Amino acid sequence: MSPTPAARRKTLKALLAADEPLLLPGAYDALSAQLAERAGFSATYLGSFAAAASGFGLPDVGVLTLNDMVDQTRRIVEATSVPVLADAENGFYDAPNIWRTVQAFESTGVCGIHIEDNLGGKHTSAPAGLLSEDRMAQKIRAALDARTDPDFLVIARSDAAWVNHDTEECLRRLEHYIAAGADMVFAPALPAPVLAEARTRLAAPVMVAGDLLDVPGSDVPAHTVQEYGEAGADVILLWYTLLGAATQNVTDVLTTLRTRPDVAGIKHAVTDQRDFEALMGYEQFEQRSARYAVPRPPAQA
Image (cartoon, rainbow, N blue to C red):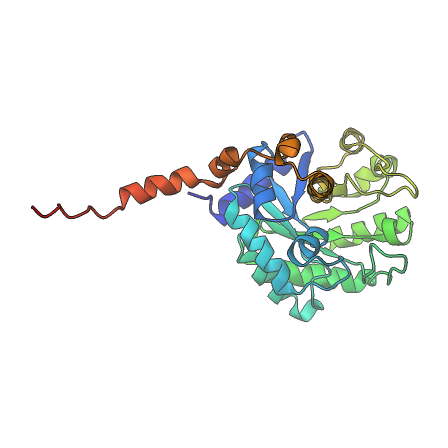
C-alpha cells in the first residue's frame, strides 16, 4: 500500500533534517520516477521543464497550465511511494487566487511546491525579469494560508542570480521570502562559494540546482554536488539529468537503427524485455488473474 500524503510529507521533513544534503533527481514522467525510487533515491521531483518536454514536446516557456502540472504530478505521486516535490511555476495566479494552486497540488499527495519570482523566459535570451519582492512575499503568505496540511512545503524560488546575475539581490530576496514564512528557499545558479559565505543569513533550508549549466560555453555545472553540500545546501536538485539521459540514449539507438537496422546490435543499450515486464508488474497481474479466475464448468459427458 502506498504511504499516505501525510506520511510522505513527514518522511520528507525527516530527510531534510538529516546531516547529509538530499540529492533529488528530477523525474519527467511516472516511469522515470519509479526508476529513481528503484535506484535507491529517497525522493523525487517534477519540474515544468521536464513536464513540458515529456508531456507535450514543448519548451518550458510558460505554456503549461495549472492542470497540466497537477495532472503530471499526480501520476508521479501515484506511481511511487517516496516523497515528491513539484514545480508550481510562478503560482499561476496572483496572491488572492493562489489558494487554487496550493489546493490543487496538495490534493495530488505531493509533499510541496516551489513558487518563483521569475516572470518568464528562463531558458531564452530574453528573460522577462522578476516579480517585485513584496508581491512575491505576498504570494508566499497567501500560499501558506491556503494549505490544509502544515507539513506541505511552500518553497520560495528566486532567480535573481540566474536572470540578473546578482547574487546579493538573490540573497536579499531569499531573506525576504523566509521572513514571509517560506518553509524552504530555492536559488538556481547561486554559486557554491556565495552560498557558503552567506548560509547563516538564510534561516531556512536551501535548495540549489546541481545540474544547471550556469557557465557560458561550458557543458558541465559550475559546481559539483559535493561542493554544494559543503557550502550548506540542504537539497541538491538534478532537474535535467534524467530527461537529458533518456533523450541521449533514445537518440543514439534511433540513429544506429536508422543506419543499421539490427536489433541485436543495440541490445546493450536496451533493457531486456523480460526485465522491463518484471519492473512493470506483469507477474503481479498474473497472480491476480489466477486468484480471481472463474472456474471452468466441468465438461459434459
